[in-house]
Length: 357
Image 1: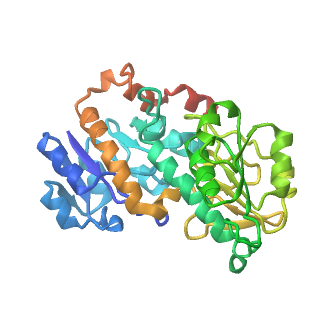
Image 2 (image 1 turned 90 degrees about the horizontal axis):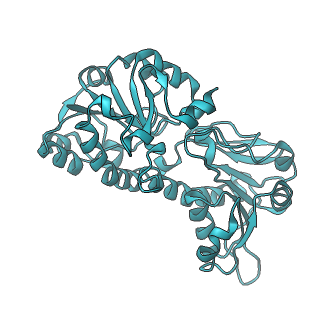
């Protein structure tokens, strides 16, 4: 099988799916790797390193998609890449189809077999999603801190306290990987943190590490009250494969103080606020009801090296296994069956299918 690694084209997306050392090991395992020129430049990996690892360098995405049996990339294909789809092609990447019905239609019409990193479940966890979620959670806090600065139009508030002033008030909605990463970092810096989750009791042992962190059940009235006083709010709600529930109503955002910051990490799954819309790394923020909104779907691209090293390390073994699996065995495979989103011209993942109805 030929596995192709294209250069990412999403705005300021510098990550790469596989690093040269992973390519070298896969090549030694008998898998042929094609890499588009410049694919690794954003993480400091030159074309020469990929060539020395045994990959064949190709100039264009068209050539790569035409020759590869399976394309492995980081982010979902953009509309300008849909023309490269063809029957028999296997695609393995972050897809987020619940927030991208046009991509789902294009994959079905082209009879592409598409597997999503974010829905791949093994031993009860999402191993390819987790490292990106941890990075996004940490970034959401540092990004929020940036936009709280006076020169960014924010309130002019530090996250951490000083001997003469309190730390910022931070509300985090969702206690999964993203939420815990954001809340834990905020609490560690001394901010006043409230973490909301549907089952907060499951987080109590973890929360003992952060004496200043408060756990609350995700009830609309409690969330609305917290947002009225929050300097920074972070949306970290996630349901595997499904569209993110819009737990933050417009009136909750309207109730926030002017120049507060809302960071919607769930925007890659459609967003968790009625006021959220996707932005880009080139134009990341907008104001609505006086609140600064940050809603970039590919936040981990800001830490492209950290993210690529983590992803490549975990992804390598899955690519090796997937390259040796026939099409007929994917649906019933205990791991890759969970990643399978599109097959035989239709959406087959139950949560994704429900979200697209």
